Length: 243
Image (cartoon, rainbow, N blue to C red; front, side, top):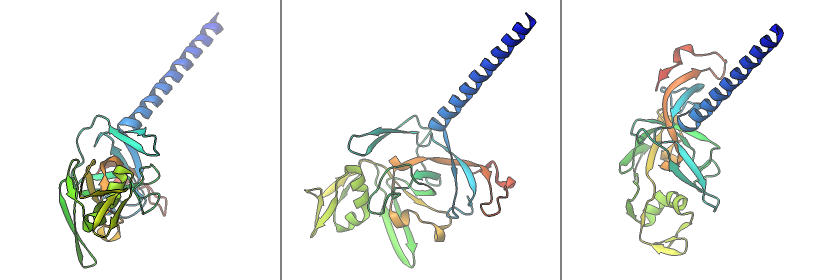
C-alpha cells in the first residue's frame, strides 16, 4: 500500500507539473501574440540608441497587435486589437520592411523587420537634406485627399498601389489608376516617416518612402539582452536599459 500511495503521489505531482508547464507555455504564446515581441538589432543604423547585437522588447499594444486576414486576392486585410496609444514622433518603431520582396512595390510580409525612429506622423510635413539637396514630403493621414500630378505620383505611387492593388501610371500629364483617369486620391491609411538615429549610415524612409500603418508591428520599450556580434561577449551594462 505504501508503494501504491508513493506512486500515486508521484503521478499526481507529474500531472500537475505538466499542467503548469502547459499553462505557462500557453500564457507565453498569448503574450507574444498580443503583448510583446522580441527583436534583435543587426546593424548600426540606430546607434547610439541601439547597437548591433542588442535584443529589444517591443510593445504590440502600440498601436495595437495586428490581426491578419487573407483578402482572397493574394493580399491581407489588417485590423488592430486593443491599443494603448498611437505611434508618436520620437518612438523607436519595429515594422515589416515594405520592400522585402523587391523595390518596385510594397508587400506586407514577415520576412524582414526594420527598427527605426518615427520622425513624422500622419498629417505632418517632413523635410531633410541628403548630399546637399533638400527634400520635403507630406505624410498622408487616413482620409486625406491629395491632388494627383506627376510630382504626386513620384511621391505616392507605391502607397496608392499598395492600397488599391492597381498600377499607377502617367500618360503625358494625365494620372491613371489602372485604366481610370484620376485627378485626386483619398488615402485609406495613416503614413509615418521612419529614420535611423545614425543618419549617415541608415537605409530608411528618406530612400524608400513612408511606412503605412499596416506595416507597424510595435514600439521598442527596453533592451533585455545584448551581445557583441563579433566577440560573443555579453554586454551586461546594456541589459534592461530603457529605449
